[in-house]
Image 1 (cartoon, rainbow, N blue to C red):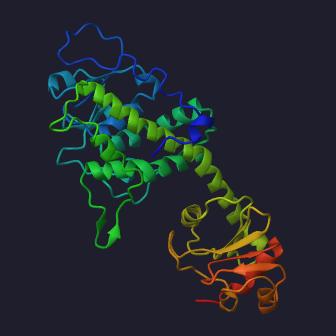
Image 2 (image 1 turned 120 degrees about the horizontal axis):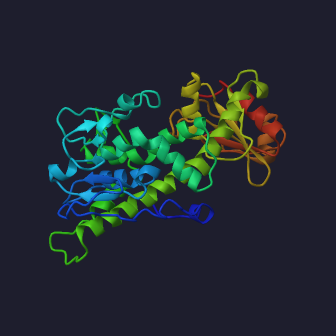
Image 3 (image 1 turned 180 degrees about the vertical axis):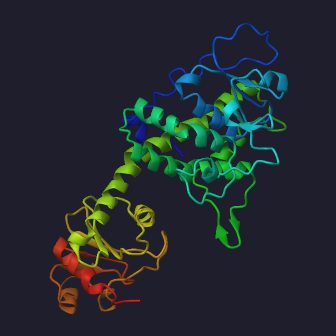
Length: 366
């Protein structure tokens, strides 16, 4: 995921002090400690602990924390918080390893108040996100001057997990992407593989210290984490609000409640499916109206699942593949500009005309 224009509008401020006092080697003499310490394992690193450490350092209490990379248990025992090593998961003592045989936690078991039906076992990234994610998101959004509300934060929390963290959890735990013909998770970023490549290769002439390379890994995955959080807060969330408004006003548009209108053009398919499930009306909406860039109106059929070419209710079969005056005559509706040959989308010069297209098409096609 490349850094994009989002950063020009929302410059990242989270990294101001992120590397201050970054490392304390395990072999150093132990002087009185004035800062917090985050422990993780030495040697080959992975995406999950790099992200776990990055997220912790977004929090005020760990902003200036030193990162101790070691497998010496006596050293880890002195750390304020430990991730991805130590063989213990105990939030009360700030121990967050997931490698022990007894570990079976998912986001749904740790945060049943926020997540339902999550089946991917957590890695250290998922564990830190489960326990500290709401605070981390709040810090990132506020520091980048983005609005924060409880409702928004809860929705963004799940979106960021689904689109970014879940794949890191799954890959680190060796979860198959499909089982019994069902896709268990989606790979959206491939960031785990890119972090893996920062480790020295077997014949590498890399002279940078392992800790410096780990810092580079944190910068990579951390930057992408911040990017998706900002995208969620400033692009994804406003779109969700537009779709929600359309759903809530659906009965004012048509008595069937099966047609909605978007006040602004935006990506809507995933929002619609998620909101239908949340509101207990799965499969209800058949057509979505929205304004095109030229001021005309589009009417689009809702797919049976996101990404499918099969729709819940296509536009009228007699209209498909026709356009303009010919289509107006066939349909008896003024202002029609086109109907796609599959019937998944059509256009009209006015909202009223597009609405009439949707109404006439309800239950008219298979």
